[in-house]
Length: 366
Ligand SMILES: Nc1ncnc2c1ncn2[C@@H]1O[C@H](COP(=O)(O)OP(=O)(O)OP(=O)(O)O)[C@@H](O)[C@H]1O
Ligand SMILES: [Mg+2]
Image (cartoon, rainbow, N blue to C red):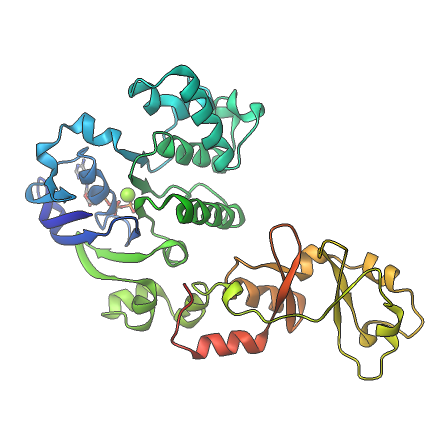
């Protein structure tokens, strides 16, 4: 646990942070949000002693940071710097290897750890390892930054706007990947962003800061339901109900789907009087498309109808959010969409009614 007790930091006249009491729980992902200049980066930099408090104290697991040597402290803390901060003259793999090297790990251990970390952030294979930062896209460079921070397996991770240089689509992909990594590794993460959607998507707990002070500190659901004041509700935006949907995972709300295998009598589906659609899968359960009397005439060739469908466009992954499902429905005009696992196998379906049900309920999946 990281505790701030009455912490302040001034730069001359400027109170960058003041009167901060904050407890960051072990193995939680705590997101600091707030407008530019609110003091977020300063809070982060005090945790690894790049900046010292002017008042108060900071404890990690009950131990005052001032009693730990800064170098020792930093080896136990992964740090992803605002604006990436890779070493330009080092290759990708050498960048990731920096801290393990400082720690004096054996060569072979470093090499396998670097390969493992690059794989983890989706940059596996020799083609990335040998490149220099200037040969990467902004998003790739930020992934390398994440791999580097994780390389020495530190219990604490500080991440200062780590995905800011990435376009919205890749940003969402990175967020999902990072969440999957975090579910496995369960680090204590302090993550800074001024993107509210990113905060809500990732956080176990959100600290809203304004002009150097903490305004509200709560789990996202409570923050969205009961913002403390006009500043917080203004910062969260008017679509708080939609944002709550982004916290709900499809897997928890989907229903079983009616499906048929490709080997069966598909022609009869198109001729059925009682109608309704069927999801069609191959022998492994991978979704191939859907068939329904309303989609074609009795006597049409089912395989031709399936071949013309774009499964990737109609379906959604089970780990996506209900907000994602809603946009997919609005985008495709379908009231019900199939839910797939990562291998493309049909798990169930989710409909507008399920989303209504979820928005009405105060209970949150988790
Ligand atoms: N080294 C410094 N010298 C003087 N003032 C500083 C210094 N570092 C930060 N400040 C001031 O402290 C305040 C908080 O800065 P900080 O970098 O923590 O904000 P932030 O919330 O991270 O903002 P952003 O979202 O723009 O990154 C700002 O007013 C900033 O100008
Ligand atoms: Mg900052």
